[in-house]
Figure (tube, helix red, strand yellow):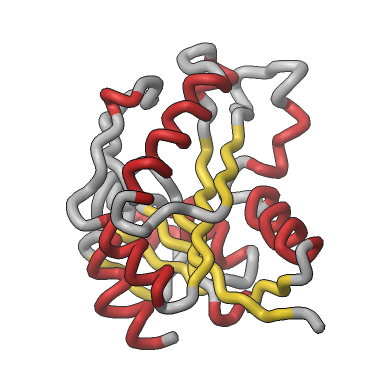
Amino acid sequence: MVQKIKVLFLDRDGTINQDTGSYIATREQLQLIDRADEAIALARSAGFRIVIVSNQAGIARGIATVEQVEEVNRYLNELLSQKNAGFDRCYYCPFHPEYPHPEYDRYVDFRKPATGMVEQAIDEFFSEGLTVDRGASFFIGDKMLDVECGMRAGLRSVLVRTGHNEEALCLSRNIIPEYVADDLYKAVTEYILVTS
C-alpha cells in the first residue's frame, strides 16, 4: 500500500541561512537565520518530510564548485541535525541561462521557477512507495521564483521576508503566495502548523 506523505520544500539561501549577497562556498560563510532550525524541527515533528530545493548557478558561473556546494549542504545538515531538523533530501540546480555550460545546460528545467527539482523529489519518494500529497505540502522561500515554483508544482506557497523579501515584487507580478511571514519560524508556527 502506498503511503501518503506531506513535504516542506524549502529554499536554502535567505530562507534557512543568511543570504550574504554572494555565493556561499565554505562552511564559515554559512550562518543560520535565527530559529530556522527550530522551525524545521517543529515541522518534522508534525510529520513533514524536509526537502531543500536551491538554485546554485554559481557553479555554472565558475564562482563555486559542485564539491563546495555539496560540502556546504552537508554542513547545513549537520547544523540542523543538532536540533533534530535535518533534511530528507537536498537538490540544487547548477544551471544559469547566461552562462552556457555543456554539463549543466541539461538542468534548464530544474532552475526555479521551473519545477524539475520538486518533481524529482516527488518521483524519488514515489519510488520508495511514498506519495506526496501536494495539497498538504508547502514550498517556502524568500523570492518570487520560489512562490512561482511552488504554485506551478501544485504546492502551497509561503513567502518569507528574510533574504530578498520580494513581497512587493510578487504583488506587482500577481504571483501571490498563500501566506507571507517574517521568517521561517513564524511561517511554520503561525501558519503551516495551524492550517495543516
